[in-house]
Length: 119
Image (cartoon, rainbow, N blue to C red):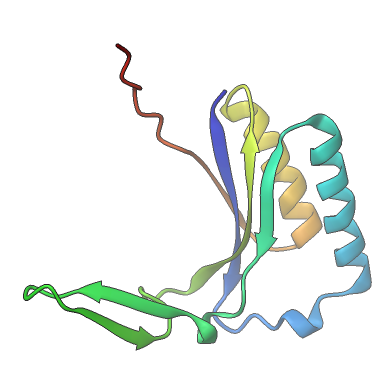
């Protein structure tokens, strides 16, 4: 069955301390609904972007480590769910619920499926 990433998009200045009790209840209820439906593989929130570390390979084979996100953007992934859904329309239905529960934009993307070798 295909797997989908439902990524929660936080703006750069997102402050998790301002998340309301109502929002947390809505997210908990959505998690419970996903689990009851058997679609939730994994989900979790991420620390704010200021705590990110980025690693980059250099031409000489060395790897550099820098503080902060890999890309500069107006929004960053603040959390996500990994769901098993029959098709994109089902994943989008869960994404719609996530937008309402989390009160921020959501991106839904299907994971690539690679053929497996047999024999």
